[in-house]
Length: 263
Image (tube, rainbow, N blue to C red; front, side, top):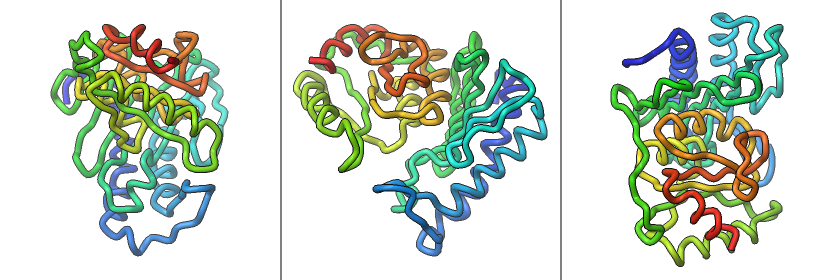
């Protein structure tokens, strides 16, 4: 793949290490031992093993960097500026149901700003990656956001809280408003993948509330480096991975999308 810096080489190698675990177990999903982590939120042996593979790979290459892990929490490093933010399996429910829409997501956060991101879809073999100032790519192809300017022609992605979680009613109302004024809304079940779809121009926009840093940090870098605009939904803050909500568009639709979503 072109344009791989030493940092991105480390991150893509770690993603591929995790993908070996996920790919193997995806085709034997019925044999997995699964435990409940919460309402409609599962953790599998594959999830945990993939995270361990990533940690080993990243700590070997960048031993001073901290890590923020979905399953294991935060591991502090001696380097106060850099930390990796890791989701070993974004799209767990898809994985468990044999749907190939899931990803490994690894971001490098520098001084609390997303600096580099890798999102790897093991089954489709799509490696999305970006580093600040050097553009975004999928495999060997450069990414660019779409050029649509009219909301009525725009396709959006989103995610919903599960039944019983707070914010579900608000998300459904927002989706209804967006459906009424756009070309449609898709829910792929992976926030990392949704942001990559904005970067690739396949989606014109994406929004979601109730997110965690590991859900979106890598995808934010990829969408931005592809020419997109990524902020929080209401206030337009520039660090949505730390604020719990995100709005990403091709930048031409950003203000109109925010007004539409907020009603």
